Structures are given as C-alpha cells and as structure tokens.
Image 1 (cartoon, rainbow, N blue to C red):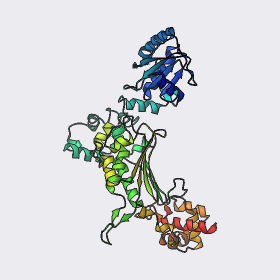
Image 2: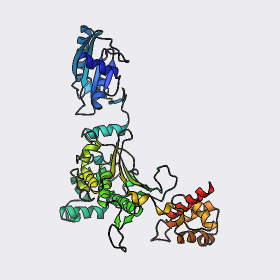
Image 3: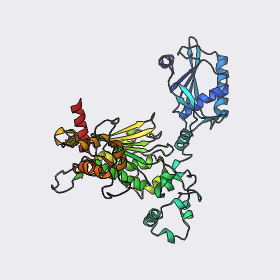
Image 4: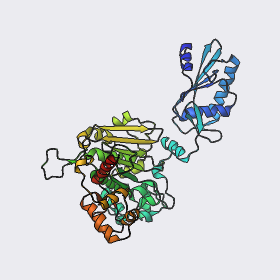
Amino acid sequence: MNLADLNQLLACGEDSRNQFKRDATNADSLSAELAAFANSGGGCLFLGVADDGSVVGLDAAAVQRLNQLLSNAASHNVRPPVHPTTENVQTDAGIVMVVRVPDGLAKPYIDNQGRIWVKQGADKRHVTSREEMQRMFQRAGLVYADVVPVSGSSAADIDDKAFNNYFSRRYGQNNEFASQPLEQLLRNLSLSDGRELNLAGLMLFGRNPQRYRPAFEIKAVAFPGTALYDTRYLDSEDIRGNLLEQFRGAFAFIKRNLHHVQRGRGFNTLGELEIPETALEELLVNALIHRDYFTSASIRLMVFADRLEIISPGHLPDSLSVETIRQGKTNRRNPTLTEHASQILPYRGIGSGIPRALQEWPRIELIDDVAGNQFSAVIWRPEAEWVAKPYLTPEVTPEVTPEVARLLAVVNGEMSRTEIMAALGLKDEKHFRQHYQQTAISQKLIEMTQPDKPRSRLQKYRLTPAGMAWLQQKASKDK
C-alpha cells in the first residue's frame, strides 16, 4: 500500500472493514478487535490514525512494541489463533501500521475471557444471544440444529406409521422385523441419541412436533389485494405437523388460493395452476429443509393478488449468495434432516431446486435479508390473472339484506357461529341461522372453513372474495 492508497482509504472513514486507532497498549483490547474482524469477514486495523481519519503517526519504537503486542494478542489471546499480516506506510506525520486480518476459517473466534466479538458497523459488539452463537457454530460446521436433542422427547413421540412407511420404502423391510428396537433404529439413523429425539427425528416423524417446537410451523395468509398491512384476508391457516404434513397443507393452501387456467384444455377440465406446480414445490421444499432451525420463528406463506411470498427464517449461509444459488450452488444447513427428507419430500438435492424453479417460472425474485435474518422467494403471478380480478368489480357483488350486511360487517378472519352471534348481539340461534347465516352462504358471501363437516364443533366461517368485494364497494359508497 502506498501513501496515496492510504490517504484514499482514510478519507472514506471507518466502516465494518476499516478501523482506526491512535495506538494500542492492551493485548485484551487488541484481541477483541482481531476476533471481531475474523468473525465478520476480515478487515484492516490502522494504527497511528485518529478516529477522524487524520494521521498522528508512530515512531520506530512504537512500531516495534506494537508488533510484539500484536503477536501476543493474535497467538495467545484469541482462540483459535488468528494470523494477521502487517504493513508499514511512511507519512509526513510518522508511520501508519496497517494490520490486515483475514476472514476466519475456524469461526467463532473468542477472546481470553471466552467472549465472541463481531463487527457492527464501524464498531464491534459482544455476542450474547444463544441463537446467534449457535448459528456461528453451525456455520463453522461444529454443530447443526437438526441433530440437537429435543428435551423431553422420546421414541414414544414417533408416528409409527410414518416411520414404518419410510423405513420400508428406503430399506426394503418393515422396521418391526429389523431385529432391533425402535430406539436403536432411530439412533442408527442419526435421529436420536438413544434417549431423546433430535430435531430431525421430531420434524420428520414426530406425531406432534409443535408440542416441543411450537414455532416450527407454516403460517399462511391470503390477502385480497397487494398490501401486507391489509386488515382483512381471504384465507388463513396455521399449518402444523411433520414436514410432509406441512408440505401437503401448504401446497393445498396455495392451490385453493391461486387460479386455474385452461391453457388450451377443454372447457370442462379443471385447468392448470396459474404458476407451474414444479416451481412451487421446489420453493416450498427449499424453505422446509434449508430454513434456520436455530431461529425460533415460523415459515410465512402469503398469497397476494399479484404475487406469492415464501419467507423462511435464516439468511443464506456465508458461502452463498442469491447469485450463486441461482447457478445451483448449495450448502446443507441441516444435513441429517436433508438426507432423510430427500426420500420423503419431492426434493432432488444437488442444488438443482432453485434453478429448476426459475426454469419453470422465471418471474421469481430471491431476497436474502441479512439484517432481518430471513430469506424470501417472491413468485409473481401472471398479470392477466389479477389486474382485472372479477371480485374487485362492483358489478358482480349481489344485493344483500340488512341482516346479511350486518353479518358481513362483523366477520373478521375465521369466527365460530357463537362468536358471530355475540358480535351481532343475537341470542336466537334459529333466527340467526335462517336470516343471517344461510342467506349469506347461499349468496356465497361467507363460507365454512370445513365444508365437508358442516356439523363439526370446530366449524368456523369466513368471508369469501365476493363478501370482501361487497364490503369494499359499500365502503367506497359511504365515503
């Protein structure tokens, strides 16, 4: 580095890759700076420079002292040791010592007191969150979320039918005749430590995984417009169960909230989904298998009038970027879960999922949100399918009775009959059923959440697209 290069860098000020210090006298303080750089992609420490970028310079004795201090800090005060390089640049004010710290290959790096430091803007911070520590160990290949034991679980939590079907299909024999108890089979398959299930075992074959990990589900919502902040929605569901059940539930949710188009097929046929199913399958499986299971958050599936969004917890691992995954590069964040899920879900592996989805449907936007620790796939719907949605035009909304109008005004999300009656201030169930409920259903303004089980005690009601359109039309007229 020559003087011109140095001045150009100093003029830009401090950032996550460049730190200025007048001097260093304490090995512990210096080791924290070295560890933060090594944990955060590497960078340069400029000694002999004030915080404002002005050169104060060092003399030869100071440079000699700093070299010894740096050697001790890098080799004895950081674990594992880091290997910085130094370069001295002569200026009119004295020497500037440029210390280059490479991006660490054995993260996380810790100081003498066992603390993990990372860069945060131009400063550094101490990592205290357990989840963040776990992610750092995960990136280093020291621990994986999918093999962490789930406290309190056991082989008794396994869905015998699901596990038996998998075992028989993959290994050609029924697990009941494998001459080993279930606990040993699970351990042999790296799904248990012999006592407790690990996360892979729970999510793949657990009867009720959300009993132990309630956040590991899919929250699905369909909105009538294009805005996330819309207070009303067309459909919503918390999709729970093991990964196969979540995949099936999420795909069913998508299919009932997207359009089917004829594309040359006969008039009486159902038609094809407006977005190719293969693309949707690949993106759903990608979210379920490659999400960050150290982050206690749900996958979000949102259907809008113009797009579909699949948002999974965890940004891309260090070695991946949106561009590299578009080209087929992959990194198994959850290797044990992936190994078994590849035999259960429509997963083809080897990094081909994203390229295949893009080939089937190029209108997919991939967003790696590092700050928000999430990864999003935005699938844009065909414009012709949503620009002139019929349920947004006033002509198709029917005339309604005052009773039905009152009902539509109080339905918010999914509500039981009792909840709707309470909101309306009604107590006569027969009167409500005849003059409110049945009329609204016959006009297709509300619908049952379980139409196949009309007498179910879990039955609820929600607005249909036509019901939403009627309310929008009324709101427009009332303005």
